Length: 610
Image (cartoon, rainbow, N blue to C red; front, side, top):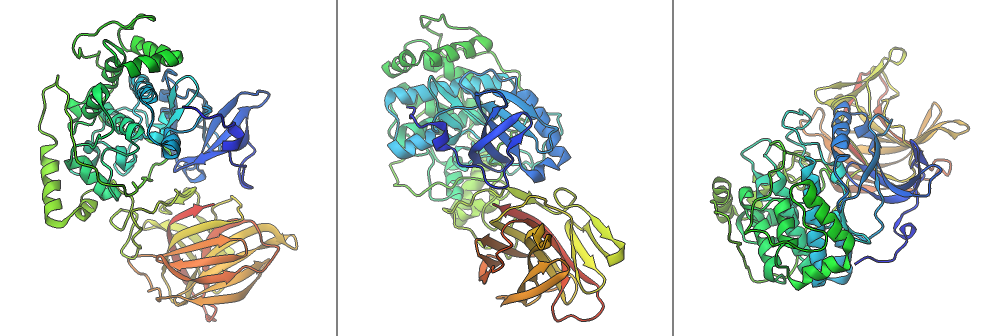
């Protein structure tokens, strides 16, 4: 189950803008990145023990609300015992960029193994089922919900599988006040039906949602497909809400237990502790006995998890358990929510062959009607308008396509099967975070937040740059909403701007986004020389209700320009001195302007990939 790849071979080199160290930890390479930040391979100075260091994104680091939530999450995560989980070792919520240090697990993800080798063998499948159930028992016992359990968060490590990323789940407290309704986390294929409840601004999510995800993970490990697979996230959500799971490829008691975990009604699912008891207690299938025999660490972890949440099995023998005797209830408050690195990212499900629909139920619990009001509504919508209507019903949960809250009337539709990585930096520009208000009386210029946007203004011709991002980067993709508030005003987007770039002075590229054109200039000291321009496919209206989305893809010696998703053209970057620098926003005048201003523009919702 575990390959022999050395950590260094799975680790990407550090990039030029990456820190060499955070706190007491030296950073050796990149392990991955997501919505919350970047994960580095590291080690404590003067130590040879490898760890995984999760460093929070710069824009989140400036958010006081996030720091409060991050601190409470860390405190709760440190209470999770290391039973089939990656142990939380250290954290510093007060660092300039908060970070979390967890045990480095040297093994591939379950997703990688299934993608490369196909479904697991029976013994390995049962090992994963037991390991993940053990981890959930420990996680839920500490009052934490994972919220984004999926195959990429299960590592097949030597000794036993390990679940990761629970350490950045939001601490669960009904009175914490740290949760906003728009903070939705999860990967659609593994999300429980109750999480799509559009009748509530903040759907109640309990440990039962993780149990549902366990069923999806085990089904994927055993069949190579998710149990509600479809050709888009919307269609997948519709199947989760209205159809039985497809479990062809699973058999015996494990199939029945997976079907039980995938019940539509949360109250009808077993708890994680009950899953564990049913998997390892009483009369076991040969595959489970083989899994436990081959992995003594897995059995030890399972037994310890049982011990801290109730009774324990003797270490050398299995004791039959009465028919589904409920385990002690976990002391977890209602209204549980979570947070993870992929906070606004969902993974689309690739199109797969359509097998025959099947469903299986496990006896032993009374059945309830399955989400009657919600399912009735969804079913009517499907019959009336097809699954496309589900996108409207669930628009707050799906952050893809034009119906999501981040989209506008001019936002192009992204194909459901296309997945774009999460941006490394995002800022709504509705209040001070990465970008901050500034004012310069001598220039009669300012940048301030008003009406939910960043407004840059100058009273006469010239330029004015807002104070913001300090990170320097060579290649970067920038996308930002632009509004022109005064005639002959242009939005300035500087890139590769550095303090000592040209003759030991300020230098960089400036792209002016004006009413009908974009102009590329070289900014050197106090000189700005326009070098090229491109006409826009459509003129930008002044003070428009919907901002124009401008995207720049800066790579090597060129910059590609897009307006509302449509290509404008490519401009050459010819100055060899300008190779790395900051991205800066500001205001400037149209090159044709010659008189008094004022000149005013507004920016919103900036995203950067680098």
